[in-house]
Image 1 (cartoon, helix red, strand yellow):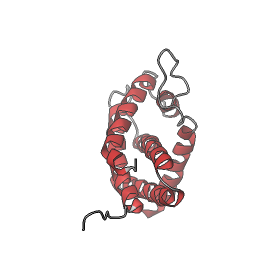
Image 2 (cartoon, rainbow, N blue to C red):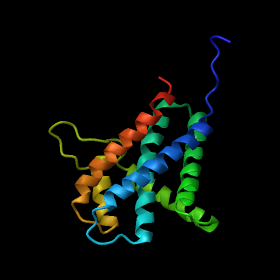
Image 3 (cartoon, helix red, strand yellow):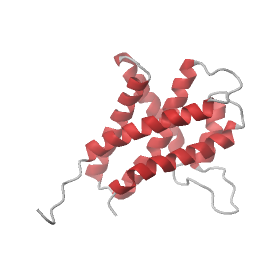
Length: 175
């Protein structure tokens, strides 16, 4: 039937976005930890992975906020949070009792980074301080005791990965 379009299932889209975010968060975690001067312990790796998922979630959540009505946005947001938590637990082979801890840590990361979500990048001739990716890089090395150089390179890597995530979901959003 011409002219009829299928209603978008925002819960399904949230689930799909969660899978995309987890894969990209793993790639980002591997990138920011590969040159660490000291071996990254498994628990710290898990914390960095969840922190990176929180960062990438912010971009999708922000897109949903500007693109969707409240009902659809709530469906999408609930599904993406649930999906990321579930996918992270699967990827890290964490059992059921860890699910709530991963969810809490993801929420903490989005709250911590969300303070900077209004400004992703600095304007020309402007300091990057206070932008999402600058503050992410700074928090990354401070919270996880990494080399301070990761503060700059991590922020740049994160911005590149976030652009990749956005490019994979760009056709989803109403115009």
